[in-house]
Amino acid sequence: MRIAVLTETDANERRVAASPETVKKFKALGAEVAIQSGAGLGSGVTDADFEAAGASIVANAENAAGDADIVLLVRRPEASRLGLFKPGAILVAIMDPYGARDALEAIAAKGLAAFSMELMPRITRAQTMDVLSSQANLAGYRAVLDAAAEYGRAMPMMMTAAGTIPAARAFVMGAGVAGLQAIATARRLGAVVSATDVRPAVKEQVQSLGAKFVAVEDDEFRQAETAAGYAKEMSAEYKAKQAELVASHIAKQDMVITTALIPGRPAPVLVTKAMVESMKAGSVIVDLAVERGGNCELSKAGEVVEHQGVKIVGHLNVPGRIAASASALYAKNLYAFVETLVNKDEKTLAVNWDDELVKATLLTRDGSVVHPNFQPAA
Image (cartoon, rainbow, N blue to C red; front, top):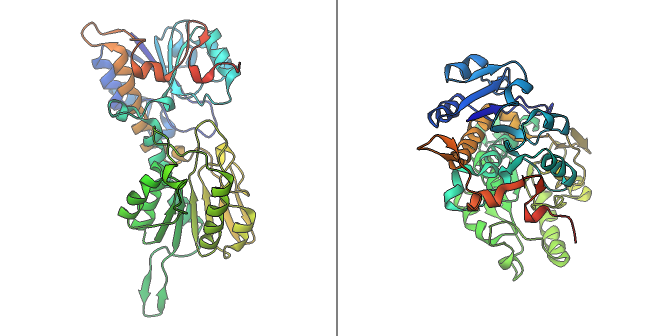
């Protein structure tokens, strides 16, 4: 059993799909681990670190992946890389499958069994494999640091002989994993924090972190969560009421962190141009949904733009901005999943295709796209 870890090709991707710790664990499962030279440098892991853990360092992706049974990546490989993998190999990555039908067809055509880590079900057994949570947690933390870096004032209240500096007011939109970590981080830095979300279940969590909860709490709000714990798409009427409430609140804020995403759909616009213009000069908005179109009407992917004195931060791949920590957690997520595909007694690859985790995450197999959510429209 041979596992390959390749260098990421995306210019904004500094994460790596393994760590010295997980290399040791894969070796204990009986696997040979081949790592492309330089794969970990963006995360502060050298080739020597991987070698010390028992991996072999390979000069290029072709030699690393050519005879690998399992290939581990952070992002879905480009079409030009698919020829590197042998037919029947298992590919595990954050596959970003929504709206990528052609890419999935290309992967299937190469005979690969591709698993999408972000489709992992949110059940107790899979908690250690939940890449959305591990990466969003760090994104929420980093978003507040990015906001603080762009904000031209101190965040906590400071009482000095020369006078008092008031605490910054931070508003977090979306109280999922990223939002809750943003709340906690902003509170630790001394800000007065408020938050909003369409899911009623998170109100208590927001308040437990010391933040004020802001939402239109009507009947639709009380039923606004799917069985899987994700936010539902809200009606136009509710959106209008919520926007009115948010508009009056946002005008008083120094920082806004937006985190709202709906799986498989463009990010909902929560902060309009008019809302931005209501904020005072020097305020900062950090849009964590910018890669899906953005929660702020004025945000631009990969840029920090300024509109009437308000900075709108649209950094790409925010977890990758704290790559060392993000890679360490992502590598553990991957190991926890790959471990379930291995017969520990015989130390061989033994995928149970009927396992609920396999069924939930398997995109392609035997030349076809097999996941029910990514079939062609009837």
